[in-house]
Figure 1 (cartoon, rainbow, N blue to C red):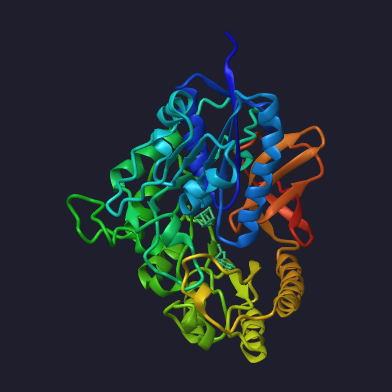
Figure 2 (tube, rainbow, N blue to C red):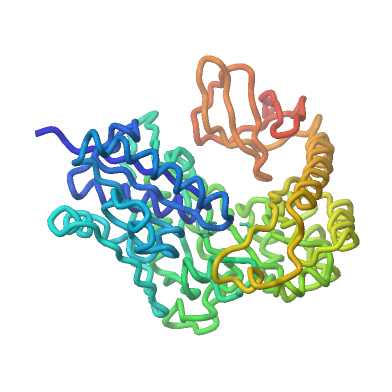
Length: 457
Ligand code: 5AD
Ligand code: SF4
């Protein structure tokens, strides 16, 4: 009998990518194999994001498009997972009756059983969100063949870089943000489960791990993660994971500046394999806006942390997230965000127009900024950031950087620096993917660098 195929389309953040990987692995246990064509698959899963309205609209239009394929092949199963599933639940099936399963963010571990139930009993909606949720232990099975490519998650098909979830949910309630409603309360995984998972990965050849959580700085605060140490914190976890033998590079994301401790910042100085790269979302450069966003820090406090980080790790590359056009943001407030950009000179940033999200406090604020003003501000911000990114990249010209090779074929090679900059090589290298080489940077573009191998003697 022919095996059934699945195709997972992932939207949104790395947390969703990791969840897609977990779903893909569990489907293997139900006799599915991964297909390369979404429209020909027996099972299509859309793992969705609802952080901004646009992300959600994309999902709805793709679901509408899939209806035609399902009419031709009624056996095709369609599943909606992730944050839109969590938030919209049964409303998805009301609008899109051809959907077989709506599965919430904490329910993906039951995917196989729920799919079977949807075949025997009709469409299912399972979106329970528990406050005392215990993230299941999920030891990765990474039997990825040589040169394998996962359409589910190209970023995760790497044989030497992986994400490991260390916590889920968020308790911060930034007024614009939907995450506390889609991912629930903050829960941290047990130290032992995380360390075991990283060891399995490293033993199978993984060289680089990124620890994932919505707010990693508060790891271990809402539930005890180490039975023998009630004070175990994120900096302890970083140290413990960094010492796993064979792990070449360690990263983490994401951090809320309000909880960034000196101890954690010192890790960038003290932990040798912790990469000199830090994503520290600031969101706005005006204290008034930050307060209305409920961010619980001021611009001055943010800048103080940036200075400390540079002191502990001079080569650190900082990136950030910014929202423009938050309700009530004046021209003066926005000018302060532009000033912050000049002060910090981020290596890169992700910037977004404020988008109303259902259930959030900011969606009730009355002084909304006009769409054309948001667009103008975003364009100004992004133009200046692009210029700064190139200027920052040019600082690497002539320098020798350690690059972990990711791809290498007859046309050339590609890898990443510790600072997370992509480096292209125009000639094929003798090194294998996963190797770390010394490269002298001779060209700096907007999004990447070019390098040549530097002989070590
Ligand atoms: N509107 C626009 N951007 C948002 N983000 C989060 N919520 C919203 C929203 N309602 C941005 C923040 C966050 C990033 C992941 O998405 O900058 O850090
Ligand atoms: Fe999108 Fe946030 Fe959900 Fe990630 S956690 S998928 S960014 S809404």
